[in-house]
Length: 340
Image (cartoon, rainbow, N blue to C red; front, top):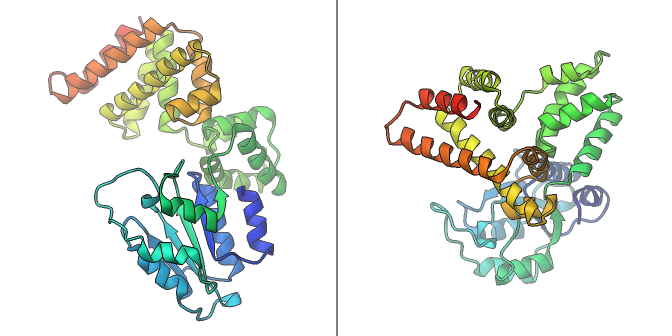
């Protein structure tokens, strides 16, 4: 079930005893959590609302709470929100408790009607080989909150703006989407500023958007990479100095730059092999919008140039971390050398 369909169902239809929210889009996760709270008229400190972090809390406590009778909730139902069920995945992490699944597996065969258990799995996928995963997906209402496609994010933002009677021209809208990287959660976090500004009747131009919405570190690194590759040493160094003034460490800047050049190199190789945007994003596990920008960028550069740049950045990282060179001097030297 898609998120929008789920929000409507939570509002209007009888509640199921068990829901699985699967995906990494945190904005949609929060929307759905609040929809359950509104339906049952619960506040954060109500006794009929219980939160668990399943990386730290035993799973059998979720079962016990789900089977306990409601105290004050509307519809005589308790709301149990259980987050981070890592045991449903193949991933292993330190400092995460080992869950005893006995009580939960028994509960899944006949979920209690006195509770609404909402399990939030902020993962791209689950381990479908596990018995507990198979049974949970069979018994629960599964709600998909994976990141939306680019056009769906744009549609969602446009609908939100229209509902608030806020108008953006094409240039301003494209700038806003670029600054928020076609990411729904980032876009909705920044949209409040636009709504407040627009409510005054002032025009939301491209320049106003740039002033209201801060450029992310990743966007700055993208611009830095572009200028280094294009040979614009002065502009590249200005971006680097601006990042420094904002408190960003050279080692961190270099690490993200390595990641950006790696993405460009991977994109170049995969494009040559015939991969399309969606396939590349899935293969390298990054947001499709970042792949779209990379595909536009790499057309101007050859594979050898990107490989040389990547090797130099990795070498510089080693020299700095082993104390052989000053990090700021080495980074500035790298920019001047590469941008000649």
